[in-house]
Length: 342
Image (cartoon, rainbow, N blue to C red; front, side):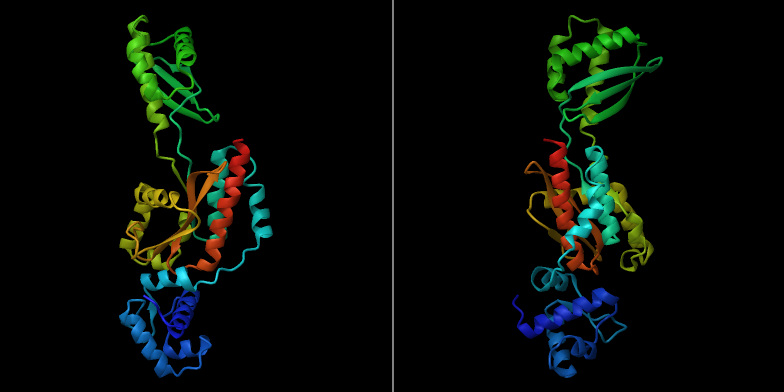
């Protein structure tokens, strides 16, 4: 719904003031800060119209008003003035963190940077792991306990513990690993499953069982989503009164970070979009808490979108500062990962 210039100016002033100090904003305050030559009575009339339209609300204990999720949406979509970010300062803080170490370390550092600079929680959805493996190794730990080591195409390593019914010798483990690597290296574990059913008949049953157990465990390892989301700075949100003001809110907050399911849905949605996206609680069913907002952006490797990063904070956040922070972090992470995966 279109608002006239006067209503837009007052809504913008109200949201900015409420974000700054968290107190309901009264008509006299709006008259002083809006820059409009309007009487408090006229402003009260405009505020009543905005309340009827669902853009602001009146807390029971105050004559002032606060923005609703719908009011925040109008603000971030049409009224927000994004502050130019000091790229040199941000890049200098990120440069060393995003240029050294494995891709997992760089992604973890990106989440920490987002948390540190926003003072809320930083979140990064890691690139989808391919099911393809380059080679595997078996390491005998003790009787009937074997460590399966899976090396992916990019050098990433996954480990899984195998409990077997047979006590395999080191030479048997080498033989089994060599057979899998020579015949199936570079394939996905799902492809190997199908081929194993037909091609292992010539081997002894105990060796067949080992390979089948290894392939099953390898498939589970490559499809494990438990580390698909890296979160940093969750504790910052405990000091945000809007999110932790009561036990019900705290419970929701901890469930959000423990289960991660709703975060994965939100980040998957953002993954399909371009540029910065803003999800506001109470308006978007993807955000599990009414007073929470998530600012996200996809990132790429060699031009292909592989994941999403962002900041989780209260709806009463400084969007003009967080939006460019998320945007530049996505660009720098894309650049760092592309250079490490030529």
